[in-house]
Image 1: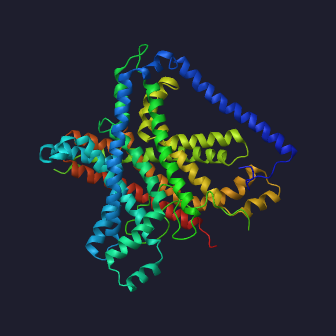
Image 2: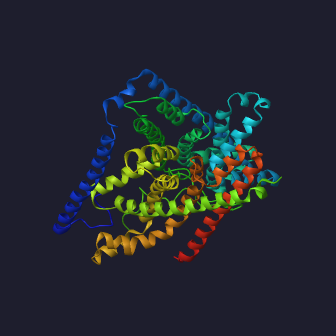
Image 3: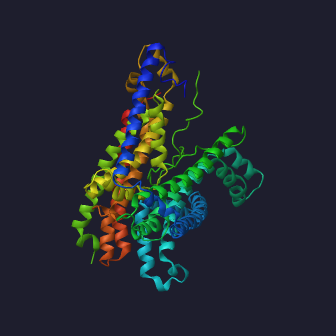
Amino acid sequence: MSSSVLYDAPGPRARLRNRLYTVLGSLAVLGLIVFAVYRLHAKGQLEPEVWDIFNNAGVRTNLRDGLLTTLKVFAVAGALSLVLGLLLAVARLSEHKPVRWFATGFIEIFRAVPLLITIYALWVLFLTYKNDLGVLGTDTGFWGLVVGLTIYNGSVQAEVLRAGINAVPKGQVEAAYALGLRKYQVMTTLLVPQAVRSMLPTMISQLVVTLKDTSLGYIILYPELLYAARTMAGNIIVNGENPFTAVTIVVGAIYIAMCLALSSLASWIERRGRRAKTGVVVAAAAEPAEQPGVLDVTEGPLGPVEGDENRPTAK
Amino acid sequence: MNVLLDHLAEFREGFIGTVLLTLASGLLAMVLGVIVAGFRVSPVPPLRLLGTVWVTLFRNTPLTLLFLVAWFVVPVIFVPGLSPWTKALLALGFYTSSFVCEAIRSGINTVPVGQAEAARSLGMTFTQTLRMIVLPQATRTVIPPLSSIFIALTKNSAIAGAFSVTELFGVQKLLSDQGFAIAWIFLWVALGYLVITFSISGLFRLLERRLGVAR
């Protein structure tokens, strides 16, 4: 960052000024930290007893179970959303009008509606018809969450994949047809593999969103990490009050670690893909955009503007 | 019996609640986002660090967790006695500000290097370069991602409804608890959100056309 174009290599006066700002900035940041720690301390949140609860086997089991439940929901919903995304993307590019219209409508509606609304509606629906649903009826919270996440993220993944498929040069498809490949062969051997390769970073970034959104299970009372931690904290009393702050900090750290691990995988794949000289361009590891453009046929990039790392530095 | 017509007052209140919450937290997110983006490109290391930590922290935390922090941690540790609406505003605004910051930062990075170089050779300082040369030009590239961020914000504001703020998801919950058919409620609530998100994307498309220049 030393050679940013926004500011010169500092001269003596600028160096002095920057040093002054550095000191002031450090003091401000330090002041914020000290203030937070002071308030935490003043409210008795830094007492050893408050943090000692994490040595308790029951607390640990609770957190572990919550984490495993979150990961279970994420694994099932993530996998299903990728499958649904693939199906919807292919359906939206279909030559048959009814199929195309259905896929377009499905994608646009469920992308535009808040995920929580969908999950809640599904949950209530599952609860209402609990006895007629068989497998789904045994664990309505789980299936409400998983189906909701699948529908929403599947729609988003479909748009990402469609952008990837559209980015494959038309000449390749023409060449494949000229060689006598069938429609499904062109799709399975030519378009989808290249689309997945180019869109993998964006798809993984959307999986990070899926992982974060599993926390919506809290609202439909499904015992994933957040709900498990919250109810556990509600049942423990340390020094006369519930240790909400300590538990929240620990759970937040767990979520941040998981999301960072997954998104660094995305940017690693992006960098790796950029190194390759051949093939389609690999998309940026960023969450796909959310334009609810019903029936839009633009083939613009879905991800945000490119060029954080690889901006031109000289003409 | 039609759920929408019988409970028009609730739906209207929920709709207005969602719009107001989105507007207010969008404003907060914009202000915070621009400031933090300025931090992230500034020549002062501790401020850059603060910006990076801010973005990493808020982008990777589930919004529901931020709501829990706003409800159970902030009142105990920092400021007691906030209304639910203010708490929802804080959670949504802080969460969204990290996304706004990243959008603005990548917008800044797309402004041609020559522009900043020219500004520097005219003797402008960092703040002047950013304020008068780079940010106005970055505005154009930032508008499409911003539109996307505000649509996401509208949808995220649904979580506030679960924390007893009057808005559309709260209406869905309320009416569903009263035993109305969920499918119809879902339809009308979804329609409410569609109206808001389409207005946002229309507004931003208009803005884009206004600010766009032929290059």
